[in-house]
Length: 72
Figure 1 (cartoon, rainbow, N blue to C red):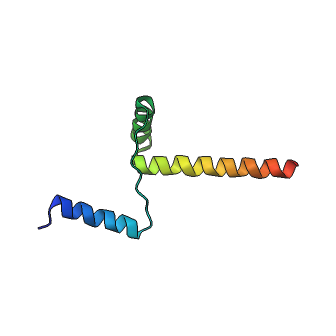
Figure 2: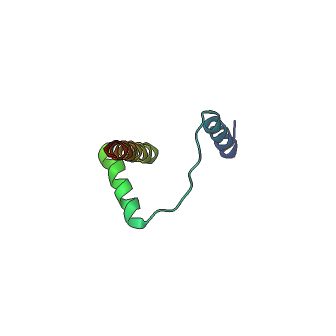
Figure 3: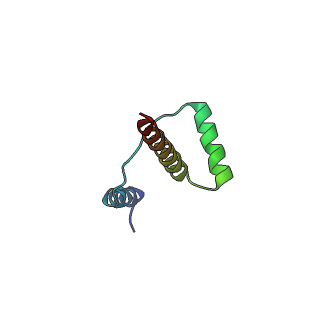
């Protein structure tokens, strides 16, 4: 039987092999509450919500920059 530390090590190795990157940070208490609300309302993990928010904002910014350059 593997220990928790061994299982965690294997999990982290698997994540690295999949191309995932570790993110370890502090956020404002109010943003943390908002994230928890989104988790509850959307039924998704924190990771999934953060990934959706980043992808959405990235796409929005790319479209904005593309539209801005075409106006020139």
